[in-house]
Image 1 (cartoon, rainbow, N blue to C red):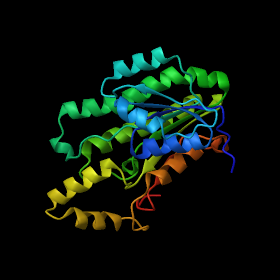
Image 2 (image 1 turned 60 degrees about the vertical axis):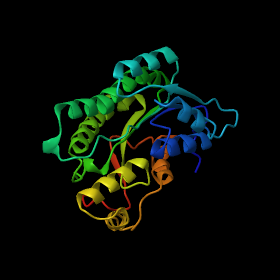
Image 3 (image 1 turned 30 degrees about the vertical axis):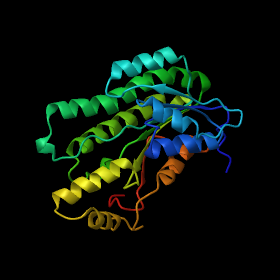
Length: 258
């Protein structure tokens, strides 16, 4: 299938590892000009060197999503224009919702929803002039089914999902789609951290907890970041032009809701 991503400019957040990195690599393979954005410049340079480059123009921006005003300045000063935006930020710290501090909620809201909004406000005007835009938010299956022990994350992820749905209705007439991809358990650094915490809380080994969590999915395994990236890149393509305002789980069938 030809995804028609040549001459499309894509901004990929959180692109130095995991799903973000896999998405950037696949977008480049499909012909897009990719701009990476994250806080670690050395890691950005390393990923940049891995991107396929067939007369394409790839670049990176350094920004810390815990500092929204810094992100806003970086985007405004870049003078770059994008057809595709992949919003992807590491999840909030694990823990029971009753134990969460106000600062944890405020920080998560800022890193996820506020930063997403800053990017959308900066990028959508150009998308409108092109009558083409793709905004894909990498969230979590907790949008459909809250995950135990991720109180702050469950709360903020749903806030982003509702923001996204509202946005999709407002700008859909301009040829811009807004969709959410909901990864299940994916082989990332974040998942390794969650497994370690859960194993400690339940007084079991990391190996036993890994096996237990794999059994939650009918697929009996964790996803590869590339598998989630494939769904993201399809939604970013011209082929997905009539898919708008959805939550797409990529979880091997683990989520119990329809």
